[in-house]
Image (tube, rainbow, N blue to C red; front, side):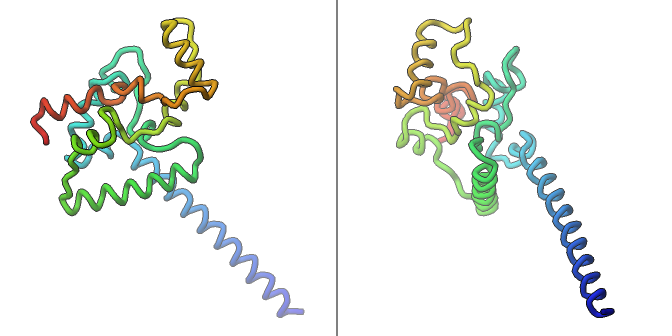
Length: 181
């Protein structure tokens, strides 16, 4: 009988330790996800400076008046599910750390030329996270028509096909003006 009580107590203690450990790991993970989701963190590598400057002056940057200020993760990570968000965030983070530590240079203009003039690594689910009402009364008729076609699933275009300058302006031109590649 005494052995059974001792076993039961050991199981309860082990479960309590496991639960507390899981809480601590969850808290630390949440803090790290939050800390690595700031604009300041994303701009902490010099490779991102030009993107940061272009974003700051763009329609969703802090210097814009009256428009939503978006963080890097609002556009450059998917918002369709938490698991996909975390998987893509982890993969992108590992890629960026390796590129930064090894000094890998990305030929941005060549990349964009091969994928289309306004290709950006952004996710449409990020656009839709903030822009829920696409048929607002103050937009032009042409935009209403395009948005209705899009919402009905009758268009192959996505948000960035029309709104390619909303995140960073015309990055291709910005890179050319800066004499990069």
